[in-house]
Length: 614
Image (cartoon, rainbow, N blue to C red; front, side):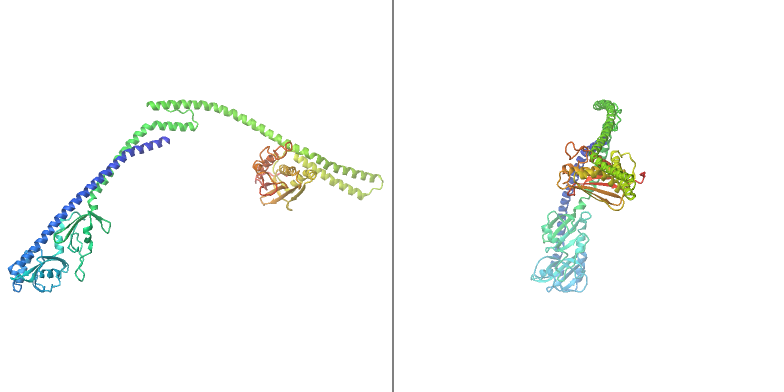
């Protein structure tokens, strides 16, 4: 796995070393090409703008000269002669750039027109008014009354022999025809030419978009999008965020020429170059990466062998060896690895022998520890028995003395010849009760003195277990003047257990409580039982102040005791804790109580498979 990881990293690193320069150089080259394209496009746009300006100037000058020549022609001087209309028709055919040629009188009212339509009053036209004021040549963009679309009208004053203005000669050309004549100068799909008049009104465009008509006063062509001509540099963004390259020129008559082209179209060839370059770069990177992969895998193959060999050693295959390599460096590593593997195999064999002997030693020590623990438990139990023997002897001697006295009285009655049968029966009943008491004491001693760890589980009465335990505790309680109280439910509580071991736990807890409060002014011990349904809880509480916190968590460890030296072995609670756990229960200190409180919990039924006895 480690070798594969190194291979991947080296392949990625090598590929990156090759790929990064290719990507950077491709990026630089493409940007350089794009820059050159834009510079060339800007130059072409500037040149085209100059050419359009020349073309529009020539067109404007040509039509202006035609109208001026008509104004100087003698055939147009007599504005009232009948042949004037036919003359204008001939002129219109010669100069077909005009869709209409007409002449007005000095009031601006038509007197003749080339299309034979109705003569109209054009005195409201600005170009008529200017010509009537003597302006030699005027060109104005208007909405044609005849064609109902944008047109450019050229006007020049007619003068009599006394050089007074007697009328106006006018020639009108459609803006669409004018724009059509410029279409051949467009660049590409998005290239267009816009022409505005001296009032920044758009009067011609070559992108096939219609010009908006004039308002009711005839003042506004289209939107004033060309009003920004004078404020543009060499490029700008339109309302759709499209970038345009353009060039602007101002003509002699105040008209403005705008030649522009979308930057996106200019850079389309660069995009193709970019895609081809990226594909070519990706192909080179793939080829280089593949070659690096093959080369690195071949170089690092020994590392894979070392990795597998290390894994074999980890699995315990100490006889595994790496093959011999031709490369000097790997040969040295292989020899060192094989020597290490031989040493590990030798040490493993030695370690296995040591482990075998260690296991035998541990088993022996564990057996000795079990025997020693059992001896200590027996010694602890014998110590407790020895301590109880004085009181127990008194408990037995007193009933025996009572039996002897009652027996003597009965014999005296019988020997007197006049026996009192009722008295004898009463005495025999007293002897029977006393005998039961002695038997109960002996039973308790017998139960406590033997080990119950090998007894089978049996269904036993908790009340009987507690009563048998109290028989062995009565003398010590009385001797130390300890007030004992116990609370147990009236209903019989039965549980599956080893009665001897449960009795040992309770006797140990009661005895420890008596010893702990020996020097207290107030001495009492209380035993309570709670039936929880599936389990029972027994609390043994005394008038002590509780277990110190530093001992609370190790009080159940062997040889830990709070008694004075010589008064305890320190294994009673440890044994009791083990018995509780063996019954699937628990024994612990309840630190929430004000006084010392030990809690024993036992399940009523340890397992459904328990073999009940009795």
